[in-house]
Length: 546
Image (cartoon, rainbow, N blue to C red; front, side, top):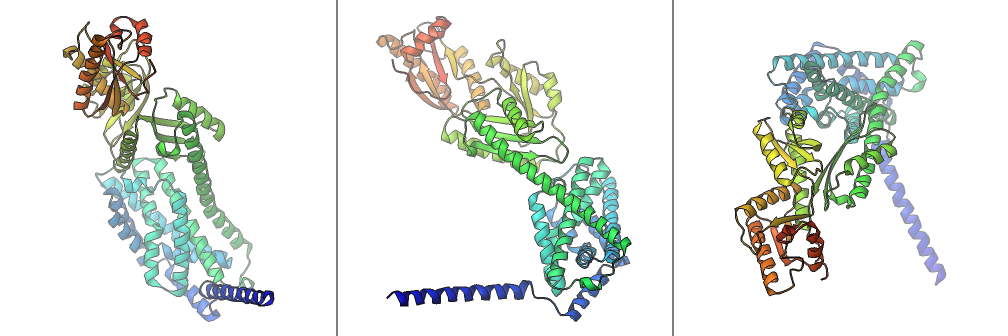
């Protein structure tokens, strides 16, 4: 039986090898089949004719730039797509790619000249329309074209490959899709807008995006032209030093932004990974509890990191510690803004994650709003402030208060009202220093929730909302030993129940219980009044054993 089995195995191997061979031949046929010499010559001639500098080319470039600029200013994706469809910039880029594949310096020079004229028309028309337009705010469509990412690079490469094959086989319907995907004109219109309003940081990003797309697409065209045999044979290339030097210069001009983009993307990816690790390590949370993390690290600049973390405990010094550790690991100073949302239970964590996601989306949609008055609010604040940031989604300036022995929760709440009344145009919210136990004190032998207790409870509800807490435990006390007899037990439980009922009415989930003897003895050191209370335990720790 061994010989038939061995024979069957041998036949299976042969069948597998045959199938692999057929697939390889099929791939070679569709992707690597070289065009006949006459057809390749016709393709080169067609590309050269399409890339000539004509009145039609200048007119269509100007119209495309005008439509793109107006679409960016009114943040209309449909209008921007229309500008991509009529843009003629793909033609000189195709010629430039074919010139690289053929090592043809003269053709590369001609293509670069036509492309430069078209780019200049796009930039200057974008500047002119921006000056004439009453809209000057940066819309999401504009901001999205000021920071090239790895995804933009991948889209440009794949679009260039598709455009190369469409050009070689003269597939006009494919070229339309390529024109939409490559998005060559919108970055130029963004560059014109940025120069017109004096946003040179936006201008650099838009220029880098255009040059990155240009480099990726032209190199992809060159690869397709060489693979399909459309490029001129090397033996027929005229090597003249002047053209060789100019061709090499053009190559390095295009390769530099590509390298800078790859460098920036790699830096941002590494910084994002390390930032998430350090935040989780410092706050002792899972990676899933980092609700939002964005990294912006332009070349030769300081990395800027913004993060929102859902944490069970607020850490006053977390931002400084994370910044120091990241600076050591990245080898560069870091600008970190870490927002901590305190959530005690799974439901609260889920709600906080959703709110953080909505806030992040809202910030992107409202990027055109005027800058938040963070510095003005911070200077006007009398309370000690550790950090300050803006939440564009809720149109609020948020101040993180620093711990202070002279400021209690009522004082922080009053300060928030005072700052809001100053009418900065934005709502002001103060996040008070976190406390894990919040007492509501009562008169001796009283369990009535009177005006004084109600005012205190309203202040505590305000603090809980600022911390993102929706669930607490209320512990009742009546002396150092609330369980000493029936009278003290009933008094303590009634106090806790009264406070709990008011919290439940304000959508705060409450668990009511009798305070432990151990806790009561610990509170006795703070005075007699401290033992006549109902304490809000923010994270509902387990009841200590009596």
